[in-house]
Each structure stands twice: as structure tokens, then as C-alpha cells.
Length: 275
Image (cartoon, rainbow, N blue to C red; front, side, top):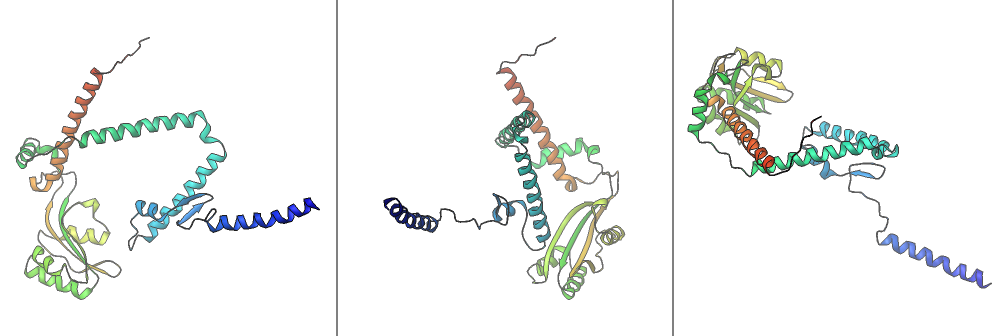
């Protein structure tokens, strides 16, 4: 009787303890995720870091989630198969750690080095190395504006013909029908899409304004070709200023890298055995 009495009294205590434990959130299921594979979770913040979730990006967001699920399924299968315990996997992980550490170290090292060029430096380099900046494709300097209202797009076109692009854009940029604009956008001929835009741009004369274009459903566009530069020609400095600066920065960074390696070689013990 004592044994049975002890059991009868003990059962309610277990039940009460379990209820209290659950009430305190001991095994509360996670809800802060957009996808999960078994015990691995993908949060909204992680998705946002991988893709812009603004309007028009929903399909791409779904693709990111789908890709994450597929990778997670394969990763968990690899874990179950013991793949991550294999020597080859561990060797690759160590190599990857070294590559990542080197990359981050160099990035930090170069960021700490101030690289600035004044306009005179850039112009001088351009003049000395003009042939390096010859165009390998027909290149266009393009202005473009997009509206969601056809009437406003027509009004913009009529206004820009009578005025100029910058002034007209300033007038319309706060209009509710205005979507976006691109000014002095440098595009090589093979970068101009879709085909309808390519046909229009390549047929326009410098400063000419296009007809109204409907390149996407519900959107109306106007383009203007400011200038066209033919393949194998050398454009003026203003057109390639960014490329000139990028090239000078690369030269400077290569020099910094060589100096760093020279310093590391001289301050470390290195031995190469020959056969």
C-alpha cells in the first residue's frame, strides 16, 4: 500500500512540474523564421541580407529561399553521411580559412593606406597612356527617364525638346508619376537592352530625344543620346575619368603589396629545400 500511495502522489507532481516548465518557455517552438529544414532555420533578417525585398524582387527572394533549402538539405545529408569528418574535407576547410584570413588581412591593410589623386595626376596619366583607353566597342552616353503615366512622359518629352535635360528633370523629379532617371550613363553597344532600346539608341543623333518608349508594362521611357564614340576611338578624359582613377589605384595597390611582401620576407625565417 505504501508503494502504491507513493506512486499516486508522485504522478501529479510530475504533471505540475511539466506544465510549469512549458509555461516558462522551456520547449517553446521557434516562430521567427521564413524557412526551416529540420532544426536549421532561415530568418527574415538573413534573407534581407541576401536580397533586396522591395517591390519587384519577390521572385528573386523566393529563389534565395529555395536555394537555401536545397543547400541545407545537401549539407545535412553530408553530415549524416559523415562527409565532414573525412580528412579531405578538413584539409579543404583549413585551406579556406587561410584564404579568407589572407583576403581580410590584405583588405584591411589596403584600407589603412590613403590613396588619393588630384585632377592633375589623373589628367597627366591619361595623356601619357591615351592608347590604353581606346574603346573596344561603340559607346554611348545616355540620359533616360521612366514614368508610370503616359501623359506625364509625353509632357516631359515635349518640355525637354524646348529646354534641356537637366532643367526638365528637375521640374519632373518630384512628380508622383516619376520612377527614376539615369544621367550621363556610359553604355557599350552590347550593354544596351532590350532590343527595342538598342534600335532606338543606335539610331539617334547626339542630343536627339527619342520617341516615347514602352520597354516594360506600365512604364514609359524617354532617352537622349548625349554623345556617341565609335569603336577604336579615344574618348575625352571626362568620359574615362573613372577608369583612369581605377587604373592608378590598382597600380598603387600593387606597389603597396610588393612593399608588404618585401617587408614580410625580410622579417620572417623562410627555407626552401632543394632536391
